[in-house]
Length: 169
Image (cartoon, rainbow, N blue to C red; front, side, top):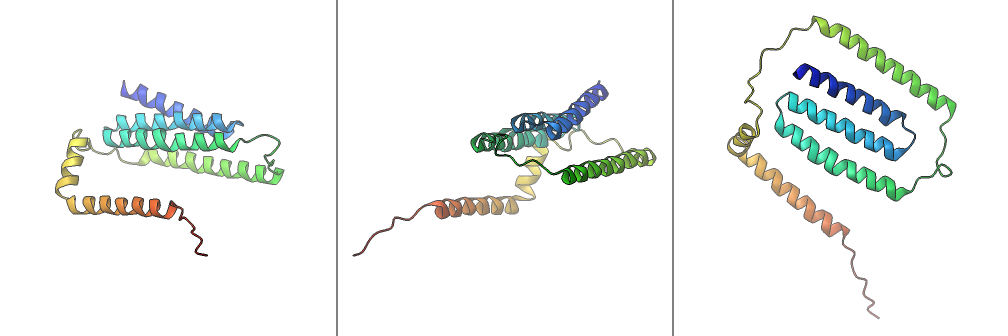
């Protein structure tokens, strides 16, 4: 059953990735990219990495893609204002895509000779184990990072505030 889910998610990922690049409408491209991130989240769940799956869902699908979509809609792109790519740039993109596809196929052919990894412990990458390690073994770096993020947020707020200009005459 997991094999069928893997193939479905892989086909969905490849299709949505290709449609992201091939779509002429930028809004449709972002929506296909969101579908691609959902397929990646499914792959994380198949690998029993629940934490990575939820972080991917929250950060990429929930935050970054919404930011891309709202920014794109604010830009109000029209066909009249967009520059068309010259034929040489299109040719270069096609050649690059063909080279990358050839490299990908060669890597897949070479992958048949690779050894199968040992069976992993299914409880190794659970959120409980990650939290236990993070809050016991790596407590100081975890807390230091949170203080660093807090100071960066305070700095960003202070830099973005506009000062009132007072006339002293």
